Amino acid sequence: MENFPVISLENINGSERSAILEKIKDACENWGFFELVNHEISPELMDTVERLTKEHYRKCMQQRFKELVASRALEGVETEINDMDWESTFFVRHLPQSNINEIPDLDDEYRKVMKEFALKLEKLAEELLDLLCENLGLEKGYLKKVFYGSKGPNFGTKVSNYPPCPKPDLIKGLRAHTDAGGIILLFQDDRVSGLQLLKDGQWIDVPPMRHSIVVNLGDQLEVITNGKYKSVEHRVIAQTNGDGRMSIASFYNPGSDAVIFPAPALLEKEAEEKKQVYPKFVFEDYMKLYAALKFQAKEPRFEAMKALETSPIATA
Image (tube, rainbow, N blue to C red; front, side):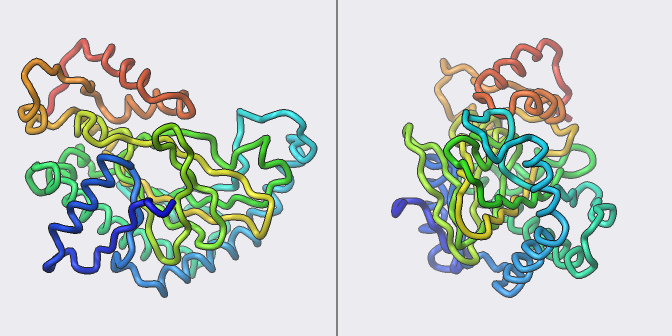
């Protein structure tokens, strides 16, 4: 855990830029995850988001979760459950069009604060994509442009609470998976751990840190970098203690009609004999496949998309 990459962005536009870029490069190549501090989202805003999220869960979600647990007879389970997660969630879409005003039970203050938080995260995601471009030797804005499609990127937030679980050895908070999309920014509980990533065959805790943003890479960045950066399997362990764990994950993903393919500039740098490993596809087609196979290995998903590459896709 002490080796987990924690990166401060405090001096990213100053004298430490190259050192910070090197840390991000190492994290992307060797971890697929890193934790950001001094990222310019104010502690006050993050504290407000956390307070309102926990209040909303207690007021509107907790009872529903208890009823679901009772209806599925999960309290007294004796065997491992592999077809559901011990989590209470709702999802907010920000881009291309926000649906936050249509989500029931959110009070006005919570809506307003979530909108403000989403704008800050969107800006941070785009800054990070440009830092990745710089590290990869791609022109500035390349990743944002690829993600754009015709209507702009998809950007949304999954708000999760992981209540205390009586049988954490038999049910996961969230089963192991890689994320399908682009770049993911997570604001997680700083008191209750549970998030783990798979590295070198070992499950490693992502340390809870106050006011940090955890960043991880999705399948689309693995494709665009032709495997130089990889999406990494991760999971959430259910806990027996406390008030449960809060997790707010924001997904900055390609637009539905965005065409995803390995960046030609990266392929040119590789040896001629090394064939293009990753497929070319429309993001929405990948998401349809992912919806059915989320908790399975990603490699067969890439192979399935490759098999669909019979007709050329226009990239203009």
